[in-house]
Amino acid sequence: MNVLVINAGSSSLKYQLLNTETREVFTKGNCERIGIDGSFIGYTVRGGEKQKLEVALPDHKTAIKHVFQLLEEAGFDQSKIEGIGHRVVQGGWYFPESKVVTDETLGWVREVAPLAPLHNYAEADVIEICRDMFPSIGNVIVADTSFHYNIPEKAHRYALPRDVVDKLHIRKYGAHGTSHRYIWKTTKELLGDDVHKLVSCHLGSGASLSAIQDGHDMDTTMGLTPLDGLIMGTRCGTIDPATVCYLVREGGYTIDEVDTMMNKQSGILAISGVSSDTRDVEERAQKGDAHCQMALDMFFYRTSQLIAEMAQSMHGFDTMAFSAGIGENSDTFRSAICKELAWFGVKIDEEKNSVRSDDPRVISTEDSKIKVLVVPTNEELMIALDVQELLSK
Ligand code: ADP
Image 1 (cartoon, rainbow, N blue to C red):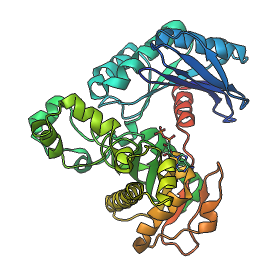
Image 2 (cartoon, rainbow, N blue to C red):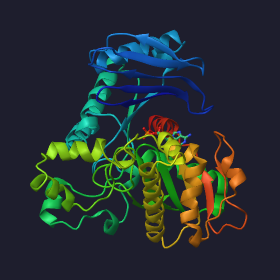
Image 3 (cartoon, rainbow, N blue to C red):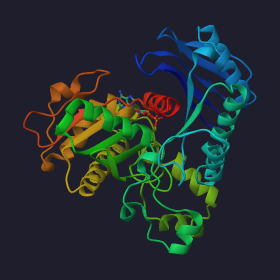
Image 4 (cartoon, rainbow, N blue to C red):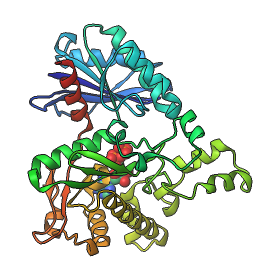
């Protein structure tokens, strides 16, 4: 099935057209600066060179029109697109699994939007536009939170007053669920019966871990929002919640300023004082920059600590898998995190670790108690597979 996968943000819209059987990606691109001056679409066709179309994109509707025009130029008119999959950041309590778009399911995306206002409203608008513009193509909603919905209550409930929690739908929702689901699926395909308890490590500029037991999610590090858990590129991750009150009361910051600080001005960027990109930070640390070294040390410490936490929620683990920007590309990060976990019996083969490849692979030694893998994530394929499954029903 040829599926168009759409990942809409408030000012961007990423797309990818792929085939679920051959897994071939025909074309992909990103509409950037929607609603802002200087908008353009960067795209590639059949793995060719990156092209750029400078075009006014006053709104998402115009962006989608241009995307369909580019698809047509690449040889894919509407009749060759058999389904559209929409990534939705927050599925709330309505999406324990992916669902076909109807008036009702589209309404749910908007109903839960206060939990992720920067994303869900734009996503809902884009879903509606696609449905109205191309009524013959089926649309499917794939929420990033779905995979975490059924984690045990003792893991997702917050110890706040019950009436408050119930009224405001406060719980751990997690994120990166589609990626963690793909990482489990790929690890299972590779290891078969040798994997039961996996700690999935999605380490990019946003980062989270998941404890996955025989395909079921048992816990995850992100919380009500994607701010919780690991130290990230610009996000602080877990801190004492009273810090928020202290910043407001004693620091004189407004709530919006604290929100911006914790989401956009913290993490690796804040500790290093240099960059949110771990490549820059690593380079500076090698030249003796103490703040950059501290950013790395804190990242390794916190990540290994939370891997242990995930392992505890499964009463042990047999496998861990690294994925996303850092997890897939940085052998030094993988090596440092695994060293922290050596006392668990985690041992990697540095030669295997240093190999660069787009294929999923095992990098632990034969005698390691825990199998360690690198699994390049593919959220688009996972979304497309959901579209195929739901639309062929
Ligand atoms: P997101 O999707 O959350 O924006 P990605 O998964 O694309 O993030 O990861 C981007 C991050 O991955 C970069 O900010 C950088 O820190 C890290 N990264 C990418 N390549 C490398 C590399 N070769 N070595 C170290 N870190 C890398």
